Structures are given as C-alpha cells and as structure tokens.
Image (cartoon, rainbow, N blue to C red; front, side, top):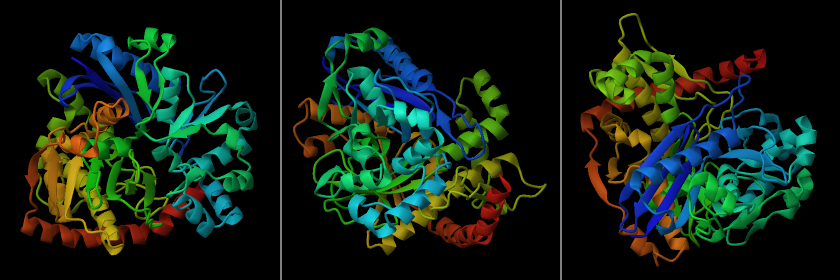
Length: 508
C-alpha cells in the first residue's frame, strides 16, 4: 500500500506523520526541543541538533511503528515555523536560527521604513514592515552585528527549506515562505525583488530558488536515507509554511474559507482568489496556484498554555506521569471547574510581543485581576480565555476589512481541548467546526505531497478528504458575558502600551 509522509517543523517540536492515500494516519511521532533565549527579547533554536535531529528521530520512529517499507512512501512534504537560518556551502547552519518570536531586529524594520518607505514595501511585497515575522530585518541585523557570518552565508534559509535541503541537497524556498521575507513579489507577478535587495544591500544570490509548495524539488539523497531511514530517491516537494499546511489540511482552498490553527502560535486565515491585500494582515501565497491567504498571526497561542504548564503547573506534569495522562488533560479538568470569566482574571497573551492586530514588539503578557482568593484552575481558564480574546480582536479587524467570517474551522494541538474549543466559540460568537484530523499541518503536508506526485489530481479531490467531526455553537449568555469582559481586555492593552515601551527602555 502506498503512503505519504507529512513533517511539520514547529516552534516547539517536530512531528512526522505517515498517511495512507485515503487520508488515514498510520503512525506519528513527535519530539520537542527548547527555545534558546540568551537575553530578553531573543529567541533562537538549533537547526542541526534541534530540527534536523528531531526529524531523523521521528521519521525513524514512524517507520518502526508502522513497519512500512520506506519504498512505499510516494512523497514527502515538510512544513515549518518561521526563522532565519544562515547556512554555508556545505548546508551547515553557521549559527543558531533566529526565530520569528525574536525581537532583536526591531530597529532594522524601522531602517527599512526609512530607506524604502512603508507604501513602496507594501506595493512590492503585499505586506507591512515588521521584525521577526519577516526575514529582511533579521538579515540586516546579521549583516551589521555578525558581519563574518553574513559574508560566510551561502543562503539565507527558512526551516522548511533547511530541512528540505538536508533531505535533497537542494537550496529552495516555497512561495508561502517567500511571502514572509519582505523581499518577494507575491501578487500575480512573482519573483525576488531586485529593487529591494539592491536598496537594502542583500545580495539576491544569497536567497534560495523559489517554488510552488507542491512542486517536486528533489529526491532523498543517499546520506539523508542513511540518517532518516527513508528510501533513497523518494520525491520531496518544496513544502510550505505551517499555516499553509494547516489550510490544506482544513480544506481551506476556496474564496471565503477561513480557519484557526491553535498551535504554539495562533493563526487565523481567510482564503482569497485575488491578490487584494490589506496591510493589517500578513498576506501569503497559498500552496496552489491563484490562491492567497490573509493571515492574522498571534504569538501567544499554545505558547501561553505551554508557559502555564511549565512554570505554574509542575504538579500536573508529575501527576500526569503517574496517571498515564497528558498534563494538559489535568489542567483542563481544573479549568473546567472555573466559571465563565475566571472570576475576573484577564490574561493578555503577549508573551513574545504581539503581531496581529496590535503589531507591538514591546507588548508583554499580563495576568490582571487575581486575588488571594483565586484558584489555580481559574488562572488556567483565564489563559485560555485570553487567547480567545486575541482571536476575537483579530476577527473584528477582518470584518472591518470586509471579510465575512461565518464559521471558524479549527485545528492544531490546542483544538484537542474541548473546553478551549467551547471557550473560543463563546468568546467569538462564531460556530467552531472541528476537523476529524486535528493534526492539520502534517495532514495538509501529506495532501500537498500527494498533489506534487500526482496521486491527487484536483483541489476538489483533496477537499473531499477533510471531514468535520464536530460543530460547536456559541452559548448566547456566555457570549454576552464575554463581550463585557472583552472591552476590559482591549482597554488593558491601551492603558499599558506606554508602560511596555518604558520597560523595554530600561533594558527588560
């Protein structure tokens, strides 16, 4: 029986998942790695010992568990988080990857604004100028602060391209990740902007060759075969950003389709069939031709609950080992005991600054309104509610821009929590559709690989493979209560915005 392999290189972990051609998961493996923060505002990861090693381990585990002959895998697709990876001619990462959560390049985003201009950058790239999310400011930071690294760099890669290069030996980037470089034209005319590269002093030859996500860019090399267990010669497609993999895995392929992926970061996307871009969103090329996605990126999605688990719920981690449960399950159980609104605790999920909709790299996380009478479960619920308020804030902006959001199709690790799903429905006032396959990134990756190797012939065929398992309707009373709290949530940020900036000036 033939199979397809989807691999997602996430911010917190890498997941490899094997699917048969009917879209059924056969085996899955996941491995976490740390975010390295050498100083406040910095976020790095080790591409070699983190991502690449995690891929080797998880692919081997999947092959061992499934007992599948590697030669039966027809294609591989890798999706990934966003980061800047400087590699040499041998394909080795020269330094740690600088992640999108990193805020060191803020002043270089301002330099791009001063040098090129806000309007001109948007006219060429379809996107706003911002640090972290886009590669150009990070590359400029490296050029000025790590000149030897900059000179030695053969190509500036992203995680998807880096892993694809490790598998095939080819230095590539897919169009969805080209969209987050601030150096690429993403409308109907596509290509690296020689104007921007020249103006900013970024040699275009240091940028990889661009491909549509579903295009086969190479095959698994002999060396990669020995390290991963995959068969030499297995086709590998260009891959995509994790959001695009999730879009395909959620069947968000036609104009008006929308979805929310609650992974480490939260991403809300709306599908377009014309490049009508709004500067308040991140605009990206889809995995297929003549489709684009308008995306709201929220940096404190599942990251917020991971922080709660690691820093405030060590008891749950230890207890989970004894009970054979997930720590998140135990946290959910406590949070379910808390009432709507968490008895007045409000959480701002800006743990790494924030992108959409406030676009403030200096914003910080806040637990507001707690007292000595509050319980642990109420804090946990407040964290979930804060993430949901962030989503609602973004949906408001989408609707102001003329996008009609009727339902939210939801996936990602956070969607495993029925409580969180219900909170999101009640806070936003929108029906939440939960797909049968919650691992929308790896599922979408497998479908993209299938399109690339011609196993699937059309978008309609792919769309028909995605099943909705549950639909949650918002509770009217809960929504009314949350709407009152939401006003306070938005005001909190406005009241604290200048204080966040002052805190950064002190050096924190």
